[in-house]
Structure formats: structure tokens, C-alpha cells
Amino acid sequence: MEELKYLNALNCIQLLGPARIELLLNRFGSAKGAWEASEKEWADITKLVNIIPKLIRKREAIDPDKEWLRLQNLGISVWGLKGSAYPPLLGRTSRPPPLLYSYGRWQEDDQMAIAIVGSRRCTFYGQEVALRLGRELAGLGFTIVSGLALGIDTCAHRGALQANGRTVAVLGCGLNIDYPFRNRDLRDRIASSGLVISEFPLDTNPLPRNFPQRNRIISGLSLGTVVVEAPLKSGALITANYALEQNREVFAVPGNIGSPYSVGCHRLIQDGAKLVETVADILEELAVGPVGRQAGVEEKKPILSLQERHLLELIPYRPQHVDEIMRSSGLPVEELWPTLLNLELKGCLQQLPGKYFTRV
Image (cartoon, rainbow, N blue to C red; front, top):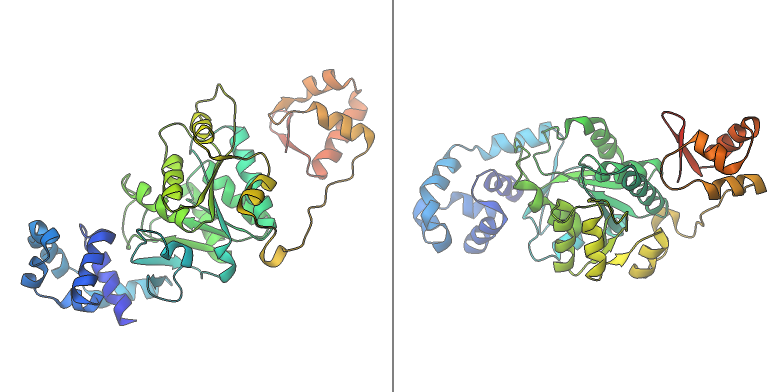
């Protein structure tokens, strides 16, 4: 516990970061030894010599006991890289964080984790795909990892929760910072049944430079990363690149060739990423089946009448107005609406505002 206290204190010093903390630990043998080392001893480390005055001033402003007490009062757990609570998959990457802060506990089944990521700005199609993949994978016992961002990340988390499954949110800020604020309730739900984690100390604001850094954790926790929608320049592609560096699988969902949100996914597919249409594509590439508490459970398909099957085949995986559905099906209104309702109750359709329907 004392080692974690001093490791947290080191992590609270701006300008250090994972690589420099590793230098200190290697030089002094422990976090406590590094913290209590003299200015001259720190200056002996060549890679720190140019910033020693700033580091020493920041160290003098930090009280390790006070910072540790703050974590305890907030109910935040701290995992050191060499501790038994640290996620094994992440620990085997080339640049694992020296410590993690968490709400919740890492479970053994969480080693069967899959990341689902994508753009904050996304289409309805992308949202539906992320929701469905998150729900179906979690229903098979996989843990869903994502970044709690608006858009695709949010849908992936919500899908896992809909299946009463496990999901992990990796933040790009301190755990006492509500970001994004619109996902505050979602974050609380994840913390109560899964995990919310960060490598950043308390009070760390969600600065742009933090998110590429946190993306290596998302991929590092996972057997593979699924990119649902992403432009060519996006955090999701950064996560995919980290996954490749970590020797993990990369998957991409194809989209509309005219959509800027699908360009990144199509580039990944061109470069060799596995194209994903269904969960079966992911399971086949990973060479695994259902896991954990849902192992051996087969997905039950709804039983549809002939008229329901006919109508479902006419409705695309995009919003379509009921008037257009009526014209293409030829069904009178008194038959159309009950059939649409039945398909919605059986989980085949979703009704949207304005009398639009979409296949799911």
C-alpha cells in the first residue's frame, strides 16, 4: 500500500509521465525510494537533467499522504503494474501505465475483452451497429471496452449494458472529472456493474493530448479492436494502430462509400483488417466461442409469420418512413401497423421519431 501511495505521488507530478516514472523506478528500485531521492540523485538521470528544477518544485508541492487520502475518500482503487489486480493483457504491452485508477474491480473473465471504438460524430447506421455489436458480444460473455466518448463509444457501452454484460470505460482525464458531462449517468451505470479506469491522477482535465495516450489502454485491454465508423484522421484509427503494435486483432465495419465517416474503416480493410458484418466474423478471427457466464448459450431467432418476413425484407438498415414502407409492401394501413408493431416487439425493427422505422 505504501508503494502505491508514492507511485501515485510520482504520477501527480506533471512532466513525468509513464516513461519517466519507469526511469525513476529502475534507478531507485521503488516508488518510495524515487520520491525520497535527493535533487542531486534525480539530476544523475540524464534524461531528466533539463527539467530537474521544475520537477523538484512540483514534488515539494505534493503531499503523498493527502493525495492518497483523497483517493480513499472517493472510493477509488489503485492498481500498480506489478500488482495482482493489474489487467494481464495490458501488462504485456510495450508501454503499460505504471498504475491505474479505477471504480470497480477487474475480473478474470475481463481478459476476454473486445474494444469497440469510433467517431464522436457518426451516422445513425454507425450508432446502431455499435449498439448491436456491444449487445451481442456482451450477451456471449465478452467484456466491451471503449472510451465513454459521445457517439460510437456511448452506443457500444449501452449495448453491453442492455445485455446485462460487463463493460469498461477508459477515460482521458482524472476519475473525479465528469467528462463528457452528458455521459455522467452512463458512467455511473458502468461503474456499478463494470469498470471505469484511467491512468491520469485526480484533477487531470480532458486535454486533447490525453486521448491518444489513453487509446493504447483501450486496445491493450482487449483481444481485438473493432472500428465502427471513423474518418481518416481520428482517435479510433489511433486505437487501431496501437492494437497492431500490441499484436492484437483489428476489425472494421464497412459503410457507405460516400460517407466521410466510413473512409477510415475502408482504409483499414484495404490494409488487411478483418471486415465485420456480424459477431460471427469477430469470433471466427479470434478462434473463440461464447465465454464466461453465457458460454454455450445459442442466440434465439424470433419466429416470424410469412407476412412479417416479407415486410422485414423490404425495410433497410436505415430510417425509412412508414408511407414508403406502405407503398413498397402494398399492405393496407390496418395490416401494416400491427405487423410493424410485432416486428418491433420481436426485436427486428426500431421505431424512430416521425414515423420512421429501421431494421436492426
